[in-house]
Image 1: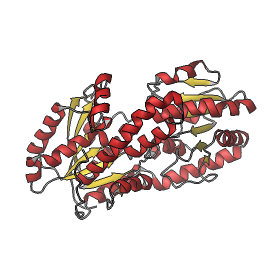
Image 2: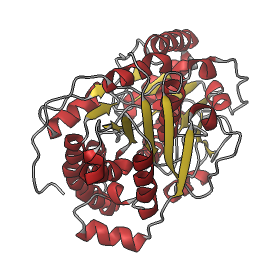
Image 3: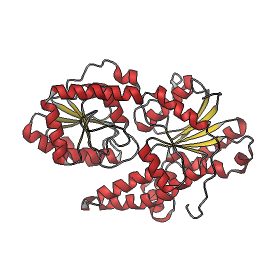
Image 4: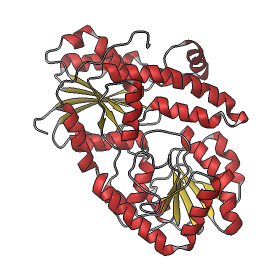
Length: 424
């Protein structure tokens, strides 16, 4: 790509420290874009977060502004679920103060690109698109929508999973409503943006089903190859340990841990009673509280560094049954050369094969059998780990990914997609 760009990036939370999926993607995009472009960052500041003066973000961004994230009560969420045509994710970060700061930046600076990171920030892209002052700018900045997940698809899968469990029917109803609303809303923002990025071909295809004629660029999630390739002393976990990492108030992660602990782990421990399941991640949901009393299971809560836990795993597990996008946790484990067992959904979006980069299984019986086979076969674990590391080295370093986003900025102006009324 040629030519320096002046880019304003909108994020739902500070991208540093990069400790969970959204922040990891946003920080690494910023860090690598900053080598060739001038960046301004407008971000929400979530409760408990701070922006210290020595934050690495100041090395990458010429200007950083933050606005306190709004808080919505459960009653507000219930009312909008029942009566608003907008999905929950479009209302989560509604803030007049953020809109005022955005308007001031657009009025006071000249940008080539305004980049919207994730669907929670989409309302600000839609507001800009409708703002007469923005439309009158010559040249007008490109509106780039980076869709971190095909969100409607995620909610559809959550609904389909929860609908099979009577005790989860309330959650299934919520996801059914959100699925329908997100289908309309996600299509709307994709039509209104000048450019759209998706994290995988599977997500891009899901967006094309919503908006025929849409041409999303594939800008996958990546991994810091140096950080996850460094020698890290393994934590002395109760051996053999099966490790899962992730933000543990995220619904797909909660479901994955419950399914694994209830359906898969007993089958493994029947053959190998000493096996221990270690769940590493911040903010464990209350649904996981019974796991704290279960023999053979440990919930760590937030840790400073997940790498010693991954290094200490005999097998890394990704038992996801719902979700979208691609799994940063999978890339991290692969970059550390671990043997992995995943569901097909857990490795969706990656060109991997069962028995080549990892083991794949979707039933409790099959998942347990794959784990047990790896526990008995150190050679297979080593072979899979080496292949997995080579796989991410070849395709998923951020240095190779960010040029795809830069190419998107320089695409010829697309044919405008037809607007459909009544979507919102």
